[in-house]
Amino acid sequence: MLLDIARSRRLLFVGGKGGTGKTSVSSGLAMARALDGGRVLLVSTDPAHNLGDIWRTELADEARRVYTAETATVDEAGPGFVDAIEVDPQATIDAHFAIVEAMMRRMLPERTHAAARDHLRTAKTAPGSHESAVLERIAVICEEAMGVYDLVIFDTAPTGHTVHLLSLPERLTGWAESLVANRDRSERFAAAARSLVSPKEETPGPDAQMRRTLLSRRDRFALLRSTIADAGQTGFLITTLAERLPVAETLVLVRQLRELDVDLTGIVVNRLSPADSGEFLAARRALEDEQLRQLHAAVDPLPVAELPLLPGELTGAEAVRQLADLLARETGTGRGGTEAGL
Ligand SMILES: Nc1ncnc2c1ncn2[C@@H]1O[C@H](COP(=O)(O)OP(=O)(O)O)[C@@H](O)[C@H]1O
Ligand SMILES: [Mg+2]
Image (tube, rainbow, N blue to C red; front, side, top):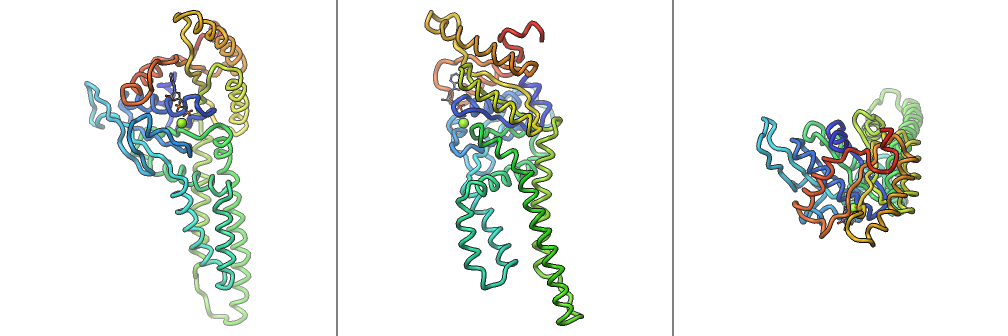
């Protein structure tokens, strides 16, 4: 089920509570798709990056190859591979505000520049600005990935943050539109004033440029929003554990994603204890099975995939390969007690 999902979508968001396996599952799925011949871009938007750790390499805010699939048969498109990016929020914010500041300088009269700069400095540390900058980076990555990658997987920040981020394009679109509308009003006013002073003077000036910048930003967010809402292109996977609190949090996230019109494609329940390795783990597993049953009952017919607790440290290509193989085999029907009907 998971590999089918990875084959049929262009964008996949992997979200969930911290520590539930977002980075591990994103990486395993990316490798599974690469082994299947896909060109995959793996993007961490979690400020607490650990994507580089799992691939045992230093990552940056630009694509770096972390894996090339060695498969017996390679078609003319070449072997599948995984490139990875860790979005650097500070670099994104700095770039973002440099543009906004340049725009403000063009837009506002000289005497207001100092106040505008103060305002920007405050805005720069506001949480909303931070998120909109990250979102803009996501939008740009999606645009640039077109035609270069078959699949982009976003290893996202913990739950609440990601939902907020996904709901931003709408709000930001509105923001850009109202700015353009304001520009229209003042442009008309300025044109009227100019025609009073000197009727023949007609210069396009920085206003037109400003308008273009705002409109292209608006278009960028509108495109991202429609791509995210398009179930044919974008899916969302939730990782969780078979424990009371993570399951409760997952059900809240399921509701929020449905409200946002995002296609929730499946849930991965990670780190399930083995039932056949001693009494202690068997007792844990019995508790986990109960949580699994409740989860299945609450989200049915959504596919719920299961990953076992693995021994050893989950870093390096071999460990990711182990995850990739498990994920590629997962059918998503699970053992949560409702599979009889699936
Ligand atoms: N199936 C598994 N078996 C054993 N350890 C796992 C498994 N999945 C993830 N881990 C470990 O659990 C920790 C959290 O996983 P990670 O993927 O980093 O979660 P997140 O990105 O959601 O914070 C990591 O140390 C990872 O190696
Ligand atoms: Mg992580």
